[in-house]
Length: 155
Image 1 (cartoon, rainbow, N blue to C red):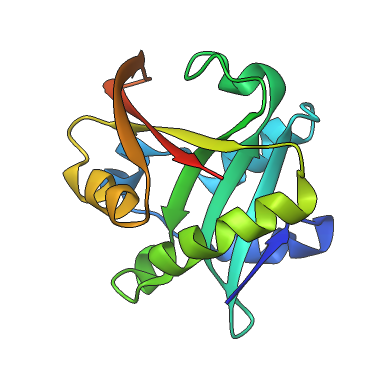
Image 2: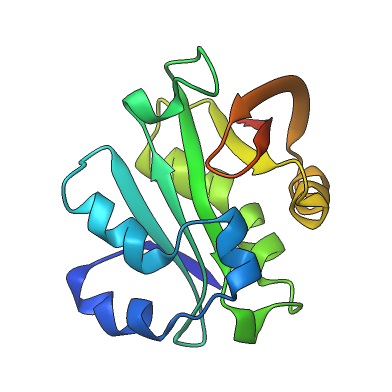
């Protein structure tokens, strides 16, 4: 697997990416995320590619994006994290999260924390993030549908 930043030439991969209604309860679609990226330079779409297929997608949001989650100006927010429904259960989300620290250090050398908000009812995602080294600091934030548990990974 490799992580790469979204480029316009990746548009067809984004169009083919499928999420269920249940997944969309907890995350923004890649298609909607790409629309936001077009007008917000602090958002960076990242594609996790496996054998030429887009299997996992997320956005790294810097600057103002992290403020509801942490007071650390050297943090990056992970948002809109998802795995294509046709690729779930294959370990791709875990693999992408394990590759992320070195990817961030390469492209954002001043960043020392990754932070995310996970919906309280989304127990499976909480377990995934914990398994990948994210720590629940006991901080909550307000999400679109549910309250969010804030989790951090220190680089």
